[in-house]
Length: 260
Image (cartoon, rainbow, N blue to C red; front, top):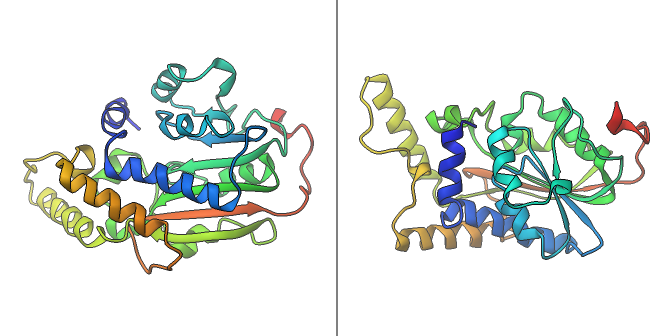
């Protein structure tokens, strides 16, 4: 992301219904599938501002990884140097099977080779380890917001599931989230795209970039979190949430793969 996007995110994410709700939903599902404990290690992959990782520190040992200098600057303000990892090319500088949890919240859409990232999760997690993934859903919602955030894609449910080989992963939960606002988001983004084609500059900044009024923010947070905690299967949504468990023994990986 651009520096301006990081700065705006750091300003609004503590209160904004989507960012605060996403953190709450992921924490809830991690606790459901196997609550993190003090002797376990969680890596927040693509940690950004570090808000989610900071919220997990009371429960387990936390590591953060990012390769954007602005993100690293923010992370250094909240974490000890030994907690902050910088990838060496495509390699994560950790041994095989050294993690109990990996989280990647709105990360896969930012990388050209999302399958390679998923393979790195399989290498890093111990058998039985959990990965929690969120991504934006539906290319029908593609907009200037995706362009500004340097997204490569938005995902269908089947497209996200296909990244996780069933011989390696057990899908614990996969569902669309942010369901209630889908029609409004679709309309707003299509309207802004129409204005852009007509050469008209919208008078207001993108809705994603600002806090709504407190009453509306509270309602949207309640809808987002409440529906995302359900076990009902939704046919569409603005985002997707995936919880997967690493199967069996690690095969075909060297003990020192991180140093390759």
